[in-house]
Amino acid sequence: MDGKQGSGGVGNGKGESNAPKPKENVGSDDGVMKAPGGDGSYISRDEFEKNPQGYFAGLHAQQKEKK
Image: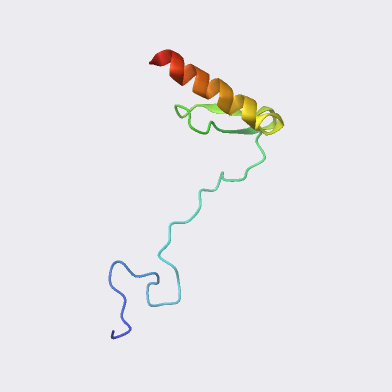
């Protein structure tokens, strides 16, 4: 290896990462989140955190009904 990094490298040669920057709204306190495993809709973060097992049980039940 010559120490140079190609297009698949981790850095850009200037000590900076080529990794994508996180979205600004990640971890925001707006009270909603993208529904996991869903169709891209948004749900209440508080309600999901209160009962994530119930959310996924309902999601799986809906998926079974569609079959």
